[in-house]
Amino acid sequence: MGGGSAPEPPPPPPPPPAPPRQADPAVQQARADERRRQRQRGGMGGTNVTGQALGDTTAATTQKTLLGN
Image 1 (cartoon, rainbow, N blue to C red):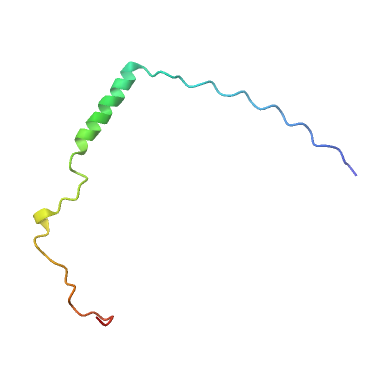
Image 2: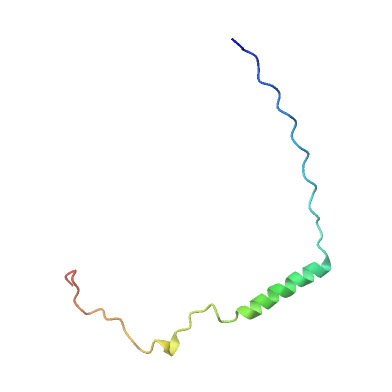
C-alpha cells in the first residue's frame, strides 16, 4: 500500500566556529601563578605521617579467634 521512499533528511547545520588558538599572555601568566600557588599550598597535608602518633604498637595476631585459629 503506500510504498514510497522516505523523505530526504534536512542538511546538517554548519560547523561551529573554530576556538581561538592563542590565549592572552596575561591569562596564561595568571593560570601559571594559580597553579604555582596551589602546589605550594598543598605541602605535606596530603601525606600519611604517622610516625610517633601511634607509638610502637603491634597487631594482636596471636590471639585465638572464633574461626578456629
